[in-house]
Image (tube, rainbow, N blue to C red; front, side, top):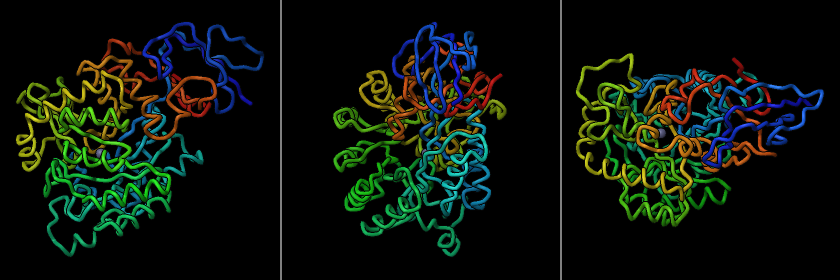
Length: 448
Ligand SMILES: [Zn+2]
């Protein structure tokens, strides 16, 4: 079996918030066999010199929508693109991700009408082309006219067209209906279940504080999913919805950016997993113009002073497009609460008691090549680099249910990356161009 000995410059194992020196990694086949100082070198082992790089686990992005490219056109293409085109988009984005050091992505509800995202996943697993592996919730379950009902997006108000465009596997009403939808997701290969528990900022016909699934529906979804050995991740913003979800035994919260303090405490007590997708909330202070934009970012724009300078737009520098009026009205309505909740979320990250993941919300919140901006965002908000990287590696591995990933230790899957940037000081350190080496399951996918 092929063996590699990786000689590392700086070494981050994905768990401990420290950079070690003089660490070697022995890879055999798909697995890491040994990690330590001055590992013995056998004759048939190929040595890879990474002594001038920072070595860490392959990154995991735990919240993406890879079937599109551009936040600005997402609304429109959600209904005009075919499933075949969406599959090509997703395959392309998974290939691009791998070259940028992201060896695993989790898609949190797609806009496929059918289950094309699982075909992309299977093709990648078969090794048909080099790409990030996929963990998938094929659809985000929700209500007619709710946050993920694309049939009314793009300005479509024609009921005949809406009925035609409604995703048959995603949209339901009533406990029995949602039981059926959960079982269908599992039947066709879902790794987990995603639900749109509340409205959103960009979905024009609802409100982020609106609980869109009632108690019976939520209970039916969670109970059925658990009976099928699947976890449930919920898109939800405020305390009313999150308190209810926690009470009913939800496994994971996405966004949560309108929550109050008592809910954060309850989340810690419950041990729920949490992916806050912060970039689409706060944007980038170096990016002119409004931050969150486009059609369907589930989380809104910047608090005062973060990327809302009012200067003329500079599209070439921006990852996000301007917001439509309905979206902006909600941002204005919730501005104070968003800012307050941001402090609560940051405290949760720094406390380190919760398993919290790094999720970019590509392409709902950011263009498909810009996932590193979530890393930069956490850094810009004052989160230490290594805490941020724990979120992108070992915490995300727990969240996606793949604890063989995200950690450089004996017995783990050999997903390993190396970077030529200063990850401690440079907030843009994980921009794809800085990734110079990628190994996925013990095979070298990039080496420059
Ligand atoms: Zn999302």
